[in-house]
Amino acid sequence: MYKLALVLALAYLLMIVYASLQPFRGWRLPSEDLYGFLTEAWPRYITPHDVLANAAAYVPLGFLLALGLRQWLRPVYSVISSALLAALVSIGMESMQMFLPARIPSNIDVLSNSTGALIGALAAPLFAPSQLIGARLIAWRDRVFRPGALTETGLLIAGLWVLTHLNPLTHIFGTGNLRATFDLPVYFFHTPGLLLTAEAVVVFFNLLGLGLLLSTLLRNDARRGTVIASFILAAIALKMLITAMFANTQGALAWMRPGVMLGFCMGVMVLLVGPLSLSHRTRLCLAMLFLLLALAAINLAPDNPYFSIPPRLAGGRVSHLFSFSVILRALSELWPLLALAYLIAVLRQDRQQPPLS
Image (tube, rainbow, N blue to C red; front, side, top):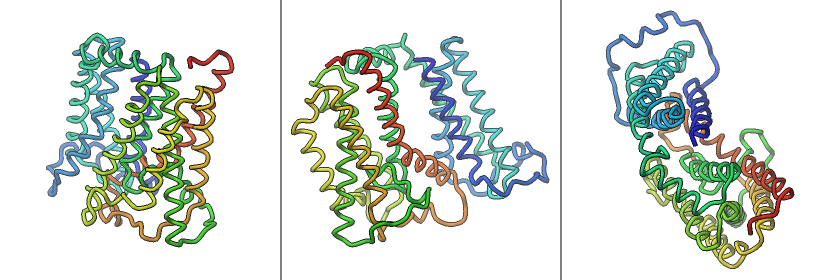
């Protein structure tokens, strides 16, 4: 558990570095003191949204660092050390922004980041295996899911799938859209019927692939429906939250288009009919097939001419929220490839030993 927390902390740190240094162009030598911004007066305009966004961005880093450092330090020292490390990271990222003309370093950002990291670090001891919450989580994990590092990896990949729905620039259940990044050609032009069909197909295959992937992580059949529904509902809740924040005119249900609902209902019906009762290896193969079909469908589908970038993410200023939306977009694009690599690894392991079910 501690080693996994450190690995995740490192991965999250790389994400913070990527987001903090966007855009990676226009580098120059700063004309001012590299750390002079720390002693400057407070910025004239401080918005609660930016303060909360900066604090929230560092909560996971503080939490993961404090949890990972528990293997060497006592709880109080792990909390203090992780909070200080996160504060140093924030200062380093803000000072690096002195080299980027599009970014403005700020002492209020450092304070917000450090506060968020401290909050995360203070929460970490509650989830240690020796504590009540941590012990119950581990007991629940051992009771519900299969043992082994591959299962931990599968749970992480499933959790990342949920997080992709925090990206306001992608559609629900729409992972794997590589067209813009790799400048892929458009094979089909938009018609209302074709767009509805494409949305339904993408959601349908992604839902089946995710459901079958999750089913392979569980010990028995009894909990499959509950676990799969929990992940799907968590994704929908995040999409509703982020949609409500950016699509004020349409509300939290703006993502609920006819094609999405058609694909969702069909996917749920098919999952309930029988694929979850197939053998472990068959479910692995079908999960791979459905994710590949979803990946192909979303990159062959026509562009939606009615989809627009939320106004709060448009414009010339590169905000912290826009930087993290870029990270989430990359995660959304790469998620099917991560899932496929995981499924291949599990299939290779299954060839060497008999499946549990």
